[in-house]
Image (cartoon, rainbow, N blue to C red; front, side):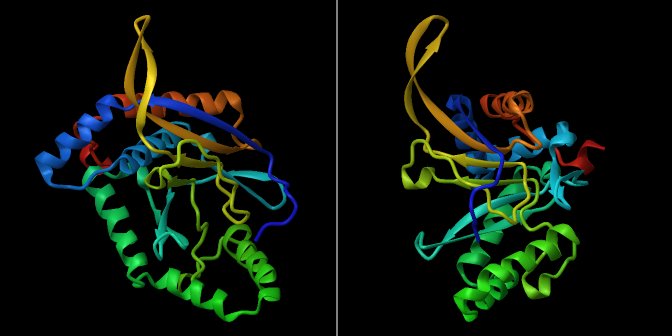
Amino acid sequence: MWSAPRDPSIHGSMDVDATHALAFLEAHRARTGEKLTMTHLVCAATARALAKYPDLNAKVRFGGRLEKRSTVDLFVSVSTGNGKDLSGAKIERADALDWTGWTEAIGGRAKQIREGKDPAFEKSRSLFKALPFFLLRPLLWLVDVLTNELHLHLPSQGMPRDPFGSAVITNVGMFGIDTAFAPFVPLGRCPMLLLITEVKDRPWVEEGKLVVKPVLRLCATFDHRIIDGYAAGLLAKEIRAALEQPAPAQATAAEAA
């Protein structure tokens, strides 16, 4: 899939006080029984941030033209085979989901993928396994042209349009990873790749005093053609605010109307 590095990537990390987020998750689970996790909170915060700054929800097409997406769609990575394989679920119109919608969207798709019941994933995996290695790079190039450049929608062949959406989010905290950055998938065409690491106790300065707090470290890779330092700061501000003070109820677009 990869050739010599050409992506104009920049990287950044941000520590977030997770005290209120952890308390919110515990209260929400007790009240509703839903298995809401830090991944859901980060996904919701990211989707809302991209919706607030639509110019950053863009992709590069036709050799360099920037084109804004019409919806905020997130690709949430899912590990399979006890960590031996990696796939993911594309969550469409992610900024309109409430908390129940997030648990159902990610949980349901993850279960399908892990049980081998996701049609698109199974078709694409079977195709790649059947081909000789020397045909894989040409096939990936063709998939990129069809789904990104031409915007064709071919789910029956395991090739949905714009397969990775607005951002890729991966939780590596379950593996005990403290800090990590990931490279863009060449056919992803998304402006941001965000890794969620392990929430752990860290030293924190609060009102001039050193205290110990549970801290979530987010590590991001940005496409510098779309997101520069200033734009990354705008997204970081929105995501931090949403995580440090989670909304007790997150209305869908229909409910808000």
